[in-house]
Length: 258
Image 1 (cartoon, rainbow, N blue to C red):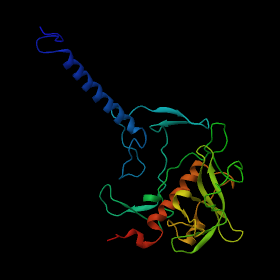
Image 2: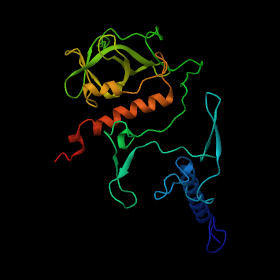
Image 3: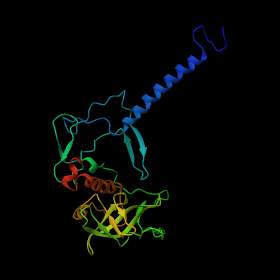
Image 4: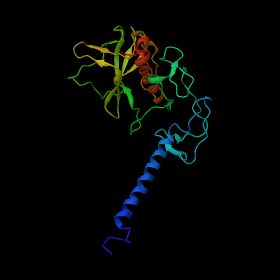
């Protein structure tokens, strides 16, 4: 019998190959099962809010996740399910049909304006400080002298009208980067947060341009309870409002380009 053979038909290489196949199949099954922690069990599209019967074979048992604020979350979710927060109707009657907003699309939490009801608490750094705060709080952060400083610049919407003025920058203490522009709407008006990813600062034009919203729509941007901090839930709603504007700010944006 040649070296390496177990029998006349099976050798060590075959056993190792079959063992790898079994391990890889088990790994794929485990990963696909873990994928079903978020968003499962599914909800019936016909009966809004009713959960589909869970599959004990394909859906894993709930696992506890300890959050930084001391709260405990379970995934898959236990107990009462989060209510649907969108306002819209189906374009067609068949399952999976796209949704259309009931009003203007900016407040309906549909499509790019959808959001999850996250924890209404602050994201924190390792030393238990609020993570995203304005420069007036994180006074050890400064704008680089070689880059354009947006503070004091006018903010223009997609209609090229002035929406307000940048009054401050909100920085991420954990990542050392700008997350939001604080925009003051009119002289002595209220202040709203504009995500830095939805605007462009002109070095030579000395203006900040946001293509997501029209100038007058800035007045409807969700605000924060605390003028010097933002919670995870507030961030979610602010980002969703600007995301919704990319599709619903004007009726023409919902039409085909060609």
